[in-house]
Length: 361
Image (cartoon, rainbow, N blue to C red):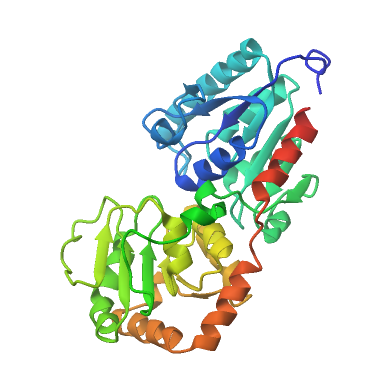
């Protein structure tokens, strides 16, 4: 650490986390365990403006990600990056921070570089099996990279210091009083299929499920479907045992009660499925950056926790058949649940907190 900062008396940590629930939920879960004062770095008009608790001061910088080939738009992104780095460096200097904690994504780049320029320690948490571009490019500049999947280490530069800690989950997954499903009310003696598409929803998965659902309903299953807010066909299927909403607050209770979950393969959702030991069918989002959802799903598929299908290989008849085959195999369901739970790290937030305290004092 730079001599100018090693004897600081400040007790603050800057958390840089922005965008999707996959970046924000682990950061919030970790923040709840920290004894340090916390300030937050995010982007205007992103999810953090509504999710970050009021007690954490939120600073925003404008940042965009590099998508596809470099072009004229890259000049604007580079300009934003420079301005964001300068603003973050100024914040760190004036705020008397001990260091930076980030969960990756493009907001991590100015945070890591600004901290590095000041000699401040940085801990980066990478929740995906295939690390993102920023993690791969800048991990060697971090004090340590905490990883959610053991497989992640092989995709990082050899000089990167890593520690496997799993991925922190929302507090509702750790509170037994919140894992009893009361809303919606589902009979205890029926199989329950839960469908989720991540914090952004998944229109193509929604369409596929609604086409296949009548067969499952005829066989006595109930379906709880989290559609997200971007689905134009939300009301195209109506049935007393098919319950759909844009979002359900208590996902922990849903997963705990579910017989089977059909989902994308975001790292946050998979971590939650592991915590509740829930069997799943995973349909990785085919356009995810670096195809990272496919790598996440593979980690669950190889141990038997999930059945994994590419979106382009699934049609209505195939999905109908596969779901019924799983529901009609109680021993197989039990094995899938045990395999999923074996991937859980229940004290991930505590481990990450200890790492931050050891790194930053």
